[in-house]
Length: 288
Ligand code: SF4
Ligand code: SF4
Image (cartoon, rainbow, N blue to C red; front, side, top):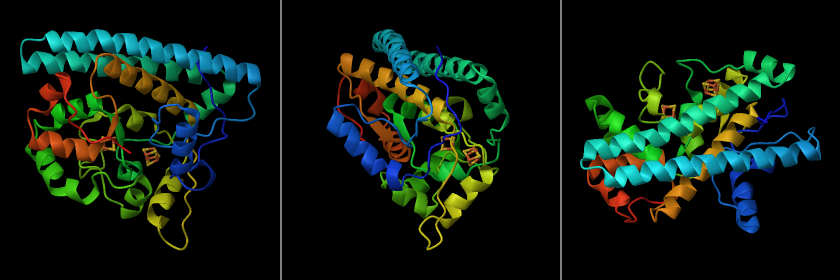
């Protein structure tokens, strides 16, 4: 069973009843790991049985991602060169993203309502209001974004020029700053699209105008922050991300999430960071 969502959508950015601070506190209180970048409102219209099956399904997804990741981490450790190490890490991202895409497609195919929802997705190349969010990523994702970005002088320069402005800034504050991700090109397209983190892939809106309005009014007296987000890609991404992090923890590697801009800045300034992380050192600053 693939998870499905209805148009009972998340409110974004995080303020009010589904705000990040409350979600984080609720996660702490319940002992669950805090993973999401953005809040997801699960439809209350779905029944208890559905919710139970959904949770079971997400649990299995998490487990599968954990097993795949552990195998790839071991291969990365055994690799005899930096190139091969990063290549092995890339299989983690490729595997996790293929799993996510397959599950999301199954979710859309599940009912007439979700098929209709797919047709309403507003996300397009060049639409980039959401790229002003703080991006919470796994350490593997951050390393792989940097692997791609470091091959381009303009992206390396953007990291050095912009990171200090927004790295590790509180998510609410970051949104109000309207500071773009250093991986965002002048054409409004992600410059590391093939290797972008799962949280970027899973943020799916059905109203680009709402995204724009939310960004432009954040922090003003007329803030209108409601953005209709499709819930189930976030649910799937969160489950997979938790699996990846559990695998890192099981391999005695630093397993927290990181803020992408801050992690890129660190990686740009310290080429030994990926190797030291794989050797079990605590290298990155946890986020949030
Ligand atoms: S989430 Fe909103 S801003 Fe981002 S690509 Fe989709 S419609 Fe555009
Ligand atoms: S990594 Fe790419 S998709 Fe994600 S916020 Fe940055 S520019 Fe946008």
